[in-house]
Image (cartoon, rainbow, N blue to C red):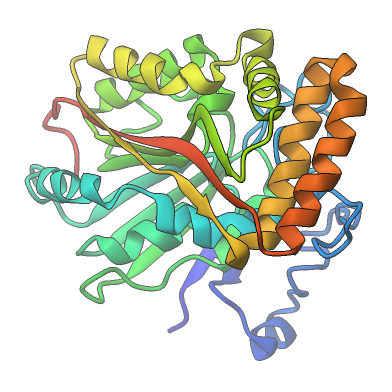
Length: 352
Protein backbone atom coordinates (compact mmCIF):
# COMPACT_ATOMS: atom_id res chain seq x y z
CA UNK A 1 0.00 0.00 0.00
CA UNK A 2 1.36 3.39 -0.94
CA UNK A 3 2.16 5.72 1.94
CA UNK A 4 0.17 8.94 2.03
CA UNK A 5 0.70 12.29 3.68
CA UNK A 6 -1.79 14.75 5.07
CA UNK A 7 -2.00 18.06 3.25
CA UNK A 8 -2.76 21.41 4.92
CA UNK A 9 -6.25 21.19 3.45
CA UNK A 10 -6.90 17.79 5.02
CA UNK A 11 -6.55 15.63 1.90
CA UNK A 12 -3.86 13.07 1.19
CA UNK A 13 -1.10 13.02 -1.34
CA UNK A 14 1.24 10.16 -2.19
CA UNK A 15 4.79 10.43 -0.93
CA UNK A 16 7.08 10.95 -3.93
CA UNK A 17 4.31 10.66 -6.56
CA UNK A 18 5.19 9.61 -10.07
CA UNK A 19 3.27 10.30 -13.28
CA UNK A 20 0.70 7.56 -12.57
CA UNK A 21 0.10 8.91 -9.08
CA UNK A 22 -0.59 12.36 -10.45
CA UNK A 23 -2.92 11.08 -13.16
CA UNK A 24 -4.85 8.69 -10.95
CA UNK A 25 -5.28 10.97 -7.97
CA UNK A 26 -5.95 14.20 -9.81
CA UNK A 27 -2.94 15.80 -8.13
CA UNK A 28 -1.00 18.00 -10.48
CA UNK A 29 2.76 18.23 -10.54
CA UNK A 30 4.72 20.04 -7.86
CA UNK A 31 4.98 23.08 -10.11
CA UNK A 32 1.19 23.43 -10.29
CA UNK A 33 -1.73 24.14 -8.02
CA UNK A 34 -1.67 21.67 -5.15
CA UNK A 35 -4.82 22.28 -3.12
CA UNK A 36 -7.11 24.53 -5.08
CA UNK A 37 -5.24 27.71 -4.14
CA UNK A 38 -3.17 29.98 -6.27
CA UNK A 39 0.30 29.04 -7.42
CA UNK A 40 3.14 31.31 -6.26
CA UNK A 41 4.60 33.51 -8.94
CA UNK A 42 7.42 31.90 -10.92
CA UNK A 43 10.89 32.46 -9.56
CA UNK A 44 14.01 33.05 -11.64
CA UNK A 45 16.23 30.11 -12.42
CA UNK A 46 19.66 29.88 -10.85
CA UNK A 47 21.22 30.08 -14.29
CA UNK A 48 20.00 33.65 -14.72
CA UNK A 49 23.11 35.62 -13.83
CA UNK A 50 21.17 38.70 -12.75
CA UNK A 51 18.46 36.92 -10.77
CA UNK A 52 18.21 36.12 -7.11
CA UNK A 53 16.04 33.13 -6.26
CA UNK A 54 13.30 34.08 -3.83
CA UNK A 55 14.61 33.22 -0.40
CA UNK A 56 18.18 32.71 -1.61
CA UNK A 57 20.07 34.41 1.14
CA UNK A 58 18.98 36.92 3.73
CA UNK A 59 17.19 39.59 1.68
CA UNK A 60 13.87 40.34 3.36
CA UNK A 61 10.97 42.70 3.09
CA UNK A 62 10.20 44.59 6.33
CA UNK A 63 8.89 42.24 9.01
CA UNK A 64 9.84 39.05 7.16
CA UNK A 65 11.98 36.18 8.33
CA UNK A 66 13.43 33.23 6.48
CA UNK A 67 12.38 29.57 6.60
CA UNK A 68 9.29 30.17 8.73
CA UNK A 69 7.28 33.31 9.26
CA UNK A 70 6.73 33.68 12.97
CA UNK A 71 4.36 36.62 12.74
CA UNK A 72 0.95 36.69 11.13
CA UNK A 73 0.99 37.11 7.36
CA UNK A 74 -1.76 38.02 4.99
CA UNK A 75 -3.46 35.40 2.80
CA UNK A 76 -1.75 36.75 -0.31
CA UNK A 77 1.73 36.75 1.21
CA UNK A 78 3.99 34.62 -1.04
CA UNK A 79 6.22 31.81 0.26
CA UNK A 80 9.31 33.18 1.95
CA UNK A 81 11.63 30.51 0.61
CA UNK A 82 11.34 29.15 -2.91
CA UNK A 83 11.73 25.38 -3.32
CA UNK A 84 14.43 26.11 -5.92
CA UNK A 85 16.67 27.68 -3.27
CA UNK A 86 16.06 24.93 -0.73
CA UNK A 87 16.80 22.28 -3.35
CA UNK A 88 19.98 24.10 -4.37
CA UNK A 89 21.36 24.03 -0.83
CA UNK A 90 20.11 20.61 0.28
CA UNK A 91 23.21 18.60 -0.67
CA UNK A 92 25.59 21.07 0.97
CA UNK A 93 23.39 21.19 4.06
CA UNK A 94 23.50 17.40 4.30
CA UNK A 95 27.28 17.32 3.99
CA UNK A 96 27.69 20.06 6.60
CA UNK A 97 25.47 18.74 9.40
CA UNK A 98 27.39 17.43 12.40
CA UNK A 99 27.36 13.63 12.30
CA UNK A 100 29.15 13.60 15.67
CA UNK A 101 25.86 14.55 17.34
CA UNK A 102 24.04 11.50 15.97
CA UNK A 103 25.48 8.91 18.37
CA UNK A 104 24.43 10.69 21.58
CA UNK A 105 21.04 11.33 19.98
CA UNK A 106 20.62 7.65 19.06
CA UNK A 107 21.51 6.62 22.61
CA UNK A 108 18.87 8.93 24.05
CA UNK A 109 16.21 7.79 21.59
CA UNK A 110 16.99 4.12 22.23
CA UNK A 111 16.44 4.66 25.95
CA UNK A 112 13.12 6.48 25.73
CA UNK A 113 10.56 4.91 28.09
CA UNK A 114 7.86 2.82 26.46
CA UNK A 115 9.08 3.56 22.95
CA UNK A 116 6.87 2.20 20.16
CA UNK A 117 8.38 4.14 17.29
CA UNK A 118 9.68 7.67 17.09
CA UNK A 119 7.54 10.80 16.80
CA UNK A 120 9.70 13.59 15.35
CA UNK A 121 8.57 17.21 15.02
CA UNK A 122 10.39 19.16 12.28
CA UNK A 123 9.90 22.87 13.00
CA UNK A 124 10.15 25.27 10.05
CA UNK A 125 10.52 22.23 7.83
CA UNK A 126 10.68 24.04 4.47
CA UNK A 127 10.67 21.33 1.81
CA UNK A 128 11.56 18.62 4.33
CA UNK A 129 15.31 18.30 3.79
CA UNK A 130 15.94 17.62 7.48
CA UNK A 131 13.71 14.56 7.37
CA UNK A 132 15.31 13.29 4.19
CA UNK A 133 18.71 13.58 5.87
CA UNK A 134 17.89 12.37 9.39
CA UNK A 135 15.30 9.60 8.91
CA UNK A 136 17.79 7.27 7.16
CA UNK A 137 20.23 7.78 10.08
CA UNK A 138 17.79 6.55 12.76
CA UNK A 139 16.46 3.02 13.33
CA UNK A 140 12.87 2.08 13.93
CA UNK A 141 9.52 3.27 12.68
CA UNK A 142 9.14 7.03 12.56
CA UNK A 143 6.24 9.44 12.34
CA UNK A 144 7.30 12.93 11.26
CA UNK A 145 5.17 15.96 12.10
CA UNK A 146 6.16 18.76 9.72
CA UNK A 147 5.57 22.34 10.89
CA UNK A 148 5.78 25.42 8.69
CA UNK A 149 3.88 28.63 8.03
CA UNK A 150 3.93 28.04 4.29
CA UNK A 151 1.43 25.50 2.88
CA UNK A 152 3.28 25.44 -0.44
CA UNK A 153 6.49 24.28 1.24
CA UNK A 154 4.55 21.84 3.41
CA UNK A 155 3.25 20.27 0.20
CA UNK A 156 6.80 19.82 -1.08
CA UNK A 157 7.89 18.35 2.26
CA UNK A 158 5.04 15.85 2.27
CA UNK A 159 5.45 14.55 -1.28
CA UNK A 160 9.23 14.19 -0.90
CA UNK A 161 9.20 12.63 2.56
CA UNK A 162 11.45 9.60 3.16
CA UNK A 163 9.90 6.16 2.91
CA UNK A 164 11.98 4.18 5.39
CA UNK A 165 14.39 4.49 8.29
CA UNK A 166 17.94 3.15 8.64
CA UNK A 167 16.71 -0.40 9.36
CA UNK A 168 13.97 -0.33 6.74
CA UNK A 169 11.13 0.46 9.14
CA UNK A 170 8.24 2.55 7.88
CA UNK A 171 8.30 6.36 7.94
CA UNK A 172 5.01 8.26 7.91
CA UNK A 173 4.35 11.98 7.84
CA UNK A 174 1.75 14.61 8.62
CA UNK A 175 1.83 18.38 8.19
CA UNK A 176 0.84 21.19 10.54
CA UNK A 177 0.72 24.80 9.55
CA UNK A 178 1.75 27.06 12.42
CA UNK A 179 4.33 29.14 14.27
CA UNK A 180 7.27 27.91 16.30
CA UNK A 181 6.67 30.90 18.58
CA UNK A 182 3.44 29.22 19.68
CA UNK A 183 4.85 25.79 20.44
CA UNK A 184 3.84 24.47 23.84
CA UNK A 185 4.63 21.27 25.76
CA UNK A 186 1.07 20.14 24.92
CA UNK A 187 1.77 20.57 21.20
CA UNK A 188 4.78 18.30 21.64
CA UNK A 189 3.03 15.70 23.80
CA UNK A 190 4.38 12.28 22.89
CA UNK A 191 7.27 13.73 20.89
CA UNK A 192 10.51 11.77 20.78
CA UNK A 193 12.53 14.55 19.14
CA UNK A 194 12.27 18.10 17.85
CA UNK A 195 14.41 19.06 14.86
CA UNK A 196 15.00 22.20 12.85
CA UNK A 197 17.44 23.37 10.22
CA UNK A 198 18.56 26.96 9.51
CA UNK A 199 16.02 28.24 12.02
CA UNK A 200 17.58 29.54 15.23
CA UNK A 201 19.29 32.55 13.67
CA UNK A 202 15.97 33.95 12.41
CA UNK A 203 14.35 33.78 15.85
CA UNK A 204 14.29 36.26 18.71
CA UNK A 205 15.56 35.40 22.16
CA UNK A 206 11.97 35.10 23.38
CA UNK A 207 11.12 32.65 20.59
CA UNK A 208 14.17 30.52 21.34
CA UNK A 209 13.18 30.41 24.99
CA UNK A 210 9.66 29.36 23.99
CA UNK A 211 11.13 26.51 21.94
CA UNK A 212 13.44 25.43 24.77
CA UNK A 213 10.59 25.56 27.29
CA UNK A 214 8.34 23.48 25.04
CA UNK A 215 11.01 20.81 24.58
CA UNK A 216 11.78 20.76 28.32
CA UNK A 217 8.11 20.52 29.19
CA UNK A 218 7.66 17.61 26.78
CA UNK A 219 10.88 15.98 27.95
CA UNK A 220 12.17 15.53 24.41
CA UNK A 221 15.60 16.25 22.92
CA UNK A 222 16.18 18.81 20.17
CA UNK A 223 18.57 18.63 17.22
CA UNK A 224 18.87 22.13 15.74
CA UNK A 225 21.22 22.38 12.79
CA UNK A 226 22.90 24.94 10.53
CA UNK A 227 22.66 28.16 12.53
CA UNK A 228 24.86 30.88 11.07
CA UNK A 229 27.95 31.56 13.16
CA UNK A 230 28.79 35.00 11.73
CA UNK A 231 32.07 33.94 10.12
CA UNK A 232 32.81 33.56 6.41
CA UNK A 233 36.13 32.74 4.72
CA UNK A 234 36.62 33.51 1.02
CA UNK A 235 39.66 32.37 -0.95
CA UNK A 236 41.23 34.35 -2.52
CA UNK A 237 40.55 37.09 0.01
CA UNK A 238 39.50 40.65 -0.78
CA UNK A 239 39.90 43.83 1.34
CA UNK A 240 36.11 44.26 1.39
CA UNK A 241 35.38 40.79 2.81
CA UNK A 242 35.41 41.90 6.44
CA UNK A 243 33.29 44.99 5.86
CA UNK A 244 30.64 43.03 3.96
CA UNK A 245 30.60 40.35 6.65
CA UNK A 246 30.17 42.89 9.45
CA UNK A 247 27.31 44.61 7.63
CA UNK A 248 25.66 41.26 6.94
CA UNK A 249 25.91 40.25 10.60
CA UNK A 250 24.35 43.55 11.64
CA UNK A 251 21.52 42.88 9.17
CA UNK A 252 20.99 39.45 10.71
CA UNK A 253 20.54 41.07 14.15
CA UNK A 254 17.95 43.61 13.05
CA UNK A 255 14.59 43.87 14.82
CA UNK A 256 15.74 41.74 17.73
CA UNK A 257 16.66 38.66 15.70
CA UNK A 258 19.54 36.61 17.07
CA UNK A 259 21.48 36.07 13.84
CA UNK A 260 25.01 34.86 14.66
CA UNK A 261 24.25 35.04 18.41
CA UNK A 262 21.61 32.32 18.09
CA UNK A 263 23.67 29.29 19.09
CA UNK A 264 24.92 30.94 22.28
CA UNK A 265 21.41 32.11 23.15
CA UNK A 266 19.92 28.69 22.43
CA UNK A 267 22.58 26.88 24.47
CA UNK A 268 21.83 29.19 27.38
CA UNK A 269 18.06 28.79 27.04
CA UNK A 270 18.11 25.00 26.88
CA UNK A 271 20.62 24.81 29.75
CA UNK A 272 18.43 27.04 31.88
CA UNK A 273 15.59 24.60 31.27
CA UNK A 274 17.72 21.71 32.51
CA UNK A 275 18.97 20.24 29.22
CA UNK A 276 22.46 18.93 28.52
CA UNK A 277 23.73 20.82 25.47
CA UNK A 278 26.35 19.93 22.88
CA UNK A 279 27.41 22.26 20.05
CA UNK A 280 29.39 21.19 17.00
CA UNK A 281 30.57 23.12 13.91
CA UNK A 282 28.77 22.45 10.63
CA UNK A 283 30.36 24.65 7.95
CA UNK A 284 29.35 24.89 4.33
CA UNK A 285 32.42 24.26 2.16
CA UNK A 286 31.76 25.67 -1.29
CA UNK A 287 34.08 25.11 -4.22
CA UNK A 288 33.80 24.89 -8.01
CA UNK A 289 31.33 22.02 -7.73
CA UNK A 290 28.89 24.23 -5.81
CA UNK A 291 29.14 27.31 -8.03
CA UNK A 292 25.38 27.71 -8.51
CA UNK A 293 24.80 27.75 -4.75
CA UNK A 294 27.81 30.00 -4.17
CA UNK A 295 26.56 32.55 -6.70
CA UNK A 296 23.11 32.71 -5.15
CA UNK A 297 24.54 32.88 -1.65
CA UNK A 298 26.87 35.72 -2.71
CA UNK A 299 23.99 37.76 -4.10
CA UNK A 300 22.00 37.38 -0.92
CA UNK A 301 25.00 37.98 1.35
CA UNK A 302 26.11 41.15 -0.39
CA UNK A 303 22.53 42.32 -0.88
CA UNK A 304 21.83 42.12 2.86
CA UNK A 305 25.03 43.99 3.63
CA UNK A 306 24.06 46.81 1.27
CA UNK A 307 20.56 46.93 2.69
CA UNK A 308 22.11 47.39 6.12
CA UNK A 309 24.70 49.92 4.94
CA UNK A 310 23.56 51.64 1.71
CA UNK A 311 26.82 53.60 1.50
CA UNK A 312 28.52 50.32 0.54
CA UNK A 313 26.54 49.98 -2.68
CA UNK A 314 29.05 51.26 -5.25
CA UNK A 315 31.97 49.30 -3.84
CA UNK A 316 29.77 46.28 -3.15
CA UNK A 317 28.52 46.20 -6.74
CA UNK A 318 32.07 45.97 -8.03
CA UNK A 319 32.93 43.43 -5.36
CA UNK A 320 29.97 41.23 -6.30
CA UNK A 321 30.79 41.36 -10.02
CA UNK A 322 34.36 40.29 -9.31
CA UNK A 323 33.31 37.54 -6.93
CA UNK A 324 30.73 36.15 -9.35
CA UNK A 325 33.28 36.14 -12.15
CA UNK A 326 35.72 34.21 -9.95
CA UNK A 327 32.94 31.82 -8.99
CA UNK A 328 32.05 31.18 -12.65
CA UNK A 329 35.72 30.57 -13.44
CA UNK A 330 35.99 27.99 -10.66
CA UNK A 331 38.51 30.10 -8.76
CA UNK A 332 36.48 30.94 -5.65
CA UNK A 333 36.27 28.87 -2.47
CA UNK A 334 33.99 29.84 0.41
CA UNK A 335 33.54 28.49 3.92
CA UNK A 336 30.31 29.66 5.55
CA UNK A 337 30.47 28.73 9.21
CA UNK A 338 27.41 27.26 10.95
CA UNK A 339 26.83 25.41 14.21
CA UNK A 340 24.64 22.45 15.16
CA UNK A 341 23.15 22.06 18.62
CA UNK A 342 21.90 18.95 20.41
CA UNK A 343 19.91 19.60 23.58
CA UNK A 344 19.05 16.56 25.70
CA UNK A 345 16.18 17.61 27.93
CA UNK A 346 15.36 15.54 31.00
CA UNK A 347 12.79 12.88 30.05
CA UNK A 348 9.40 13.36 31.67
CA UNK A 349 8.35 9.72 31.37
CA UNK A 350 5.58 10.62 28.94
CA UNK A 351 7.57 10.31 25.71
CA UNK A 352 6.68 7.48 23.39
